[in-house]
Image (tube, rainbow, N blue to C red; front, side):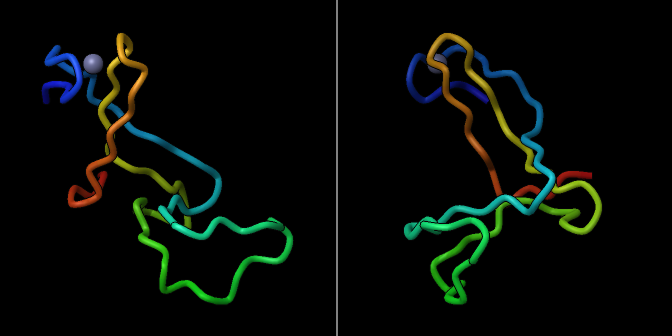
Length: 74
Ligand SMILES: [Zn+2]
Protein backbone atom coordinates (compact mmCIF):
# COMPACT_ATOMS: atom_id res chain seq x y z
CA UNK A 1 0.00 0.00 0.00
CA UNK A 2 1.26 3.47 -0.86
CA UNK A 3 1.17 6.28 1.68
CA UNK A 4 -1.57 8.77 0.76
CA UNK A 5 0.63 11.61 2.07
CA UNK A 6 4.01 10.99 0.39
CA UNK A 7 3.21 8.11 -2.01
CA UNK A 8 6.07 5.93 -0.72
CA UNK A 9 5.47 2.22 -0.09
CA UNK A 10 4.21 1.61 3.44
CA UNK A 11 5.36 -1.12 5.85
CA UNK A 12 2.68 -3.74 6.48
CA UNK A 13 2.29 -4.81 10.09
CA UNK A 14 -0.13 -4.69 12.95
CA UNK A 15 -1.24 -2.59 15.89
CA UNK A 16 -1.71 -4.53 19.12
CA UNK A 17 -3.05 -3.80 22.56
CA UNK A 18 -3.96 -5.68 25.71
CA UNK A 19 -7.55 -4.52 25.21
CA UNK A 20 -9.76 -4.20 22.15
CA UNK A 21 -8.83 -1.33 19.87
CA UNK A 22 -11.61 0.98 18.78
CA UNK A 23 -12.22 4.34 17.17
CA UNK A 24 -14.55 6.71 18.97
CA UNK A 25 -15.66 10.30 18.64
CA UNK A 26 -16.31 10.40 22.39
CA UNK A 27 -13.23 9.27 24.34
CA UNK A 28 -13.85 8.18 27.92
CA UNK A 29 -12.99 10.85 30.44
CA UNK A 30 -12.21 8.14 32.96
CA UNK A 31 -10.73 4.79 31.97
CA UNK A 32 -11.94 3.17 35.18
CA UNK A 33 -15.56 3.94 34.33
CA UNK A 34 -16.04 3.02 30.65
CA UNK A 35 -18.95 4.69 28.94
CA UNK A 36 -22.10 2.64 28.58
CA UNK A 37 -22.89 4.22 25.25
CA UNK A 38 -20.95 2.14 22.69
CA UNK A 39 -22.84 3.20 19.60
CA UNK A 40 -20.19 5.78 18.71
CA UNK A 41 -17.44 3.15 18.68
CA UNK A 42 -16.01 1.25 15.73
CA UNK A 43 -14.16 -1.89 16.77
CA UNK A 44 -10.92 -2.06 14.77
CA UNK A 45 -9.27 -5.13 16.27
CA UNK A 46 -10.00 -8.83 16.00
CA UNK A 47 -9.02 -11.60 18.46
CA UNK A 48 -10.30 -9.33 21.22
CA UNK A 49 -10.33 -12.11 23.85
CA UNK A 50 -6.77 -13.28 23.27
CA UNK A 51 -4.53 -10.78 21.45
CA UNK A 52 -6.39 -7.72 20.13
CA UNK A 53 -4.77 -6.99 16.77
CA UNK A 54 -5.42 -4.70 13.77
CA UNK A 55 -3.82 -4.98 10.37
CA UNK A 56 -2.02 -1.68 9.77
CA UNK A 57 0.40 0.13 7.51
CA UNK A 58 3.17 2.41 8.73
CA UNK A 59 4.93 5.26 6.94
CA UNK A 60 8.04 6.20 8.96
CA UNK A 61 8.65 9.33 6.86
CA UNK A 62 5.21 10.83 7.58
CA UNK A 63 4.85 9.09 10.96
CA UNK A 64 1.40 7.83 9.99
CA UNK A 65 -0.25 4.51 10.78
CA UNK A 66 -3.27 3.52 8.70
CA UNK A 67 -5.59 0.82 10.03
CA UNK A 68 -7.67 -1.10 7.50
CA UNK A 69 -10.43 -2.57 9.64
CA UNK A 70 -12.06 -4.29 6.67
CA UNK A 71 -9.17 -6.78 6.92
CA UNK A 72 -9.17 -9.09 9.93
CA UNK A 73 -5.74 -10.19 11.13
CA UNK A 74 -4.96 -13.90 11.28
ZN1 LIG B 1 4.24 8.92 3.93
